[in-house]
Length: 160
Image 1 (cartoon, rainbow, N blue to C red):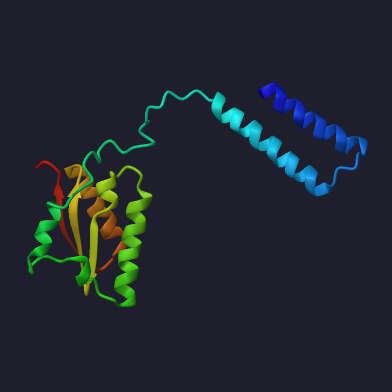
Image 2 (tube, rainbow, N blue to C red):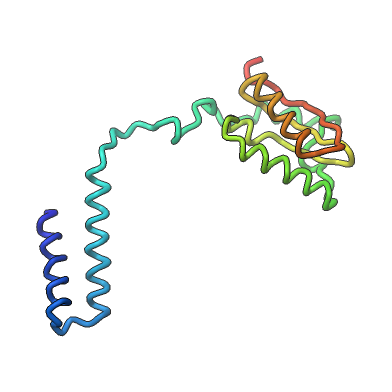
């Protein structure tokens, strides 16, 4: 099958080189089709056993449903994303912290998805994280990216 496609591609090339009456548009379509076939063959020839690697899946995020963890949001005393100030400074502070968290590839999926609420001079961090070290790392990133703000670390370690 691969030989047949390669032969077809060679025929198209010969027609173009020999100046046959093949239009430029037809040649372009034929060339693209030949490239597509060759790419498909290269992908098919690549060894893959179907298993996922650590690059494909974050092993720490086995259960991504944190509905139970969100039940504490029902209490009036906890800071939720709806408490986020709409001021430019507060939004920028929250965005800076989020960018820093997303840039840190050592954090788990849960660590990347913590709630960040900036209201006045206080930044509240909430949500489950993978470890105590990750909890501290997130708080440190928040302090670095919110100078002059008080960091209220309400992060919880999964399973603790």
